[in-house]
Image (tube, rainbow, N blue to C red; front, top):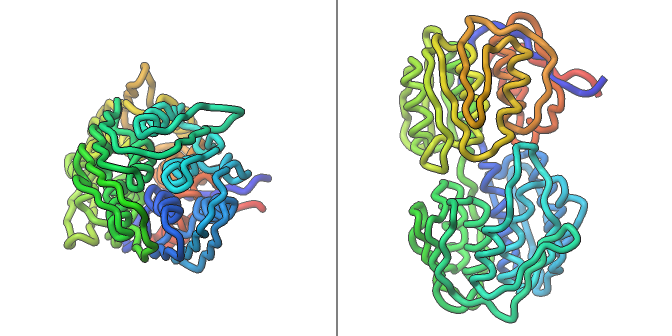
Length: 419
């Protein structure tokens, strides 16, 4: 019998939960350490499966990496290996973020096409086009992105879409390019701001972090630094949805609530009471069955595609009918197939889903297809009659440190079964 979570339905989630560093930031910060010779220390790292995988990628490039609790220590050599084609690359979607630092530092890179979640295609065209604008030659060869340049120079770069990954790779290559680079239609996520802050601590000259235009004045070299990862807004939002779905009362600490302004406003519309506690905590209280709310996924500051499964799960137990529109990843709606197993009244039409809320879901065995889908199924199981079994739980543990422990602390009855 494969390892899975058994989730007992019923009961409110009540209490406090601490959120650690952002998964969508820490892996990119680890890659940024490639840009400076010497020892870089990253604190507030989440203890999730992806961090040691990224450590393996960096080791394959010649770095010494030590992981101890929430601290990653990365010692980068003077001469890096430019081939990132280790086995770990195939398990980790974010591993492609070493492309920009390798091109910036080594002027050449061979990076295996990444693996990761089954949520749809994530083409690398914008990554490659940006590097070409900076003076690199880049092609896909034998399952790898191959890029090389005699030297990098500043450029005016327009992104067709505000891709987080493309913004990061172009940014990390541009910080060591000759001259000034302007990235228009850049991603604006808090994780982009986090990497800009770390690069600035390393000596990079960057303007416009958090806006759609990034201006990068290239420097000759960077220095190692110590940097604290921002709190994980997606994990924070997960607990906010958990409170709303279970008609609970949860205080979330360790994440800036202003990174979740739209999410918290949607929950207010659903009937939740939301209070902010400075820039490090917030509380969500749901006293009655939530009301239906429509959701549309968009790049930040819009509603994050990572939170779409939670929007569907909430809608499944809300009063009324919700429309959820997915604009980013075509395969995210695979989650709905599993929700239907739990008794959800949902159907899809293209990139729209219509969900009619039911008072109670019914337990069933379900399978996680990605990190957020897995967590969404666990929360749905809390709103079902009987015991729900969630399989493929390794996905969940790639994004949620201590997930079961936190659920139990909040009053859930959930256990890990199998070996």
